[in-house]
Length: 312
Image 1 (cartoon, rainbow, N blue to C red):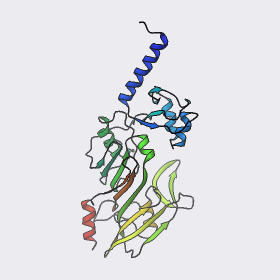
Image 2 (cartoon, rainbow, N blue to C red):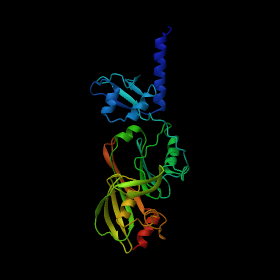
Image 3 (cartoon, rainbow, N blue to C red):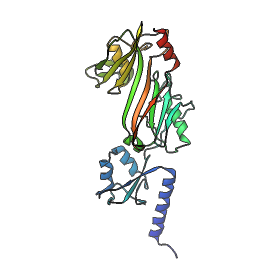
Image 4 (cartoon, rainbow, N blue to C red):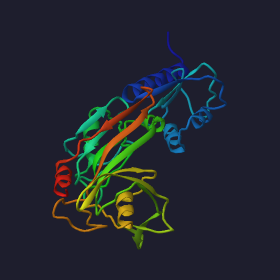
C-alpha cells in the first residue's frame, strides 16, 4: 500500500530522530505534572537560556514520547521528555596529544591531575599545548559531540585536580564542588586566618595584563588559611576558597606580606622551585547520579615535596 505524503514525512522525521539518538546522548524525564510548554519545564529545572537556545536549533533534540517536539510543545503529565545532553556546538579547541593523569572517570565526569607548567586553557603562549586540548584529544574518539566544560581552572604553574563535565546536563546537576590547596609561602604564619579583599584585573587599552591587584573596585574574594607546618624560612598552608578568582591565593598571600615561594609575579624568584608553590590536592563533589559525595586526593609533585624538606 502506497504511503501518503504526510505519512512519508512522519516516517522521515522518525528516522532522523533515531539517527540523532544514535549519534548524540539523550537524558529522559518522567513528567509529574502538566506543563504549558517544554520551555517552562526546562526553566523550572534550572536549564540555562543558552542551553535551551541550542536545543531549538536542531529538530529532534527535543522528544516527547519519542516524537520530535519543540520548546513550545505542550508537555502532559506522565509523558517522557527526552533532550539532547550536548546541544551546544562541538568544541573547536585544537586537540593536542599530551599524557593525561586520570584520577576518576565515569559517563558524566572526568577528573585529571594537572602538572605544573601546563596551561589549563589555550592562550597566545600555549595555543597548541594545554590541558583543554589534551582532554579534547582524549574525548574525540569516545564522544564525537563532546563540548569542553572544565568546572575548576588552575593557573599554569598550579598543579592538581581539575574536574570536567562530559555534557551540559552533568554540568548543571553537579553540586557542592569543594577544593583544598596546599601552598608554601615565604615567612611564618602561626595561626589560621581569613583574608577578605576584593581583587581587580589590571587592563591597559582593553588588554588583560595578567596581574591582579587588591582594589575596592574589584570582585569579592575570600581565602581561608590554616598553617600545617611552620619551617625556618616558610610555612606550609592548607587553603580553601570561598570565591575562585584568578590568582586569588597568590594575590591574597602577597597582600599580607607572605607571597608564595617561587611566585615571580607577586613575589620573587626562588632557587629552590621554578614556579609558585601551589597545588590543588583535594577535590570533592556530590555526584547527582550516584547520589553520594565523592572525595579525591592528588599526590604532591616531587619539586613541592623537595621544597618542604629544604625549607626545614
